[in-house]
Amino acid sequence: MLVSERLKRLLRLVPGERRFGFYRFLPFFFVLGGAMEWFMINVRIGKETFYDVYRRKQSERLYKARMEKGE
Image (cartoon, rainbow, N blue to C red; front, side, top):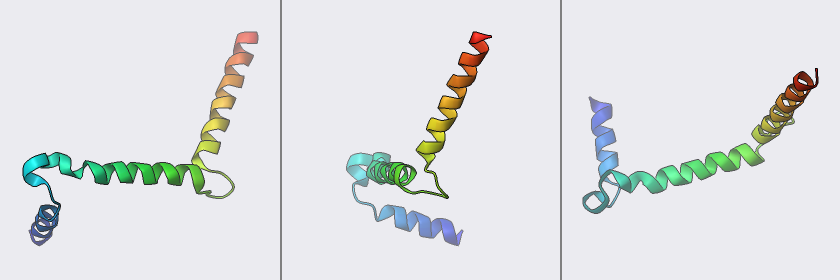
């Protein structure tokens, strides 16, 4: 119960409860989504970013589909 009371107190500190209700948290999620997108584009883990892997897998699927269609 101690954690949930602390969480409630922390959530009450976010302004705009009467005017916006639950939607007052949207800017936090917007910033979190932007940060996650930036991380996926710019941060390399090993030698590749998330989008490098995505593009490679997509081209592999296209190649495989063309080979099956050509056979």
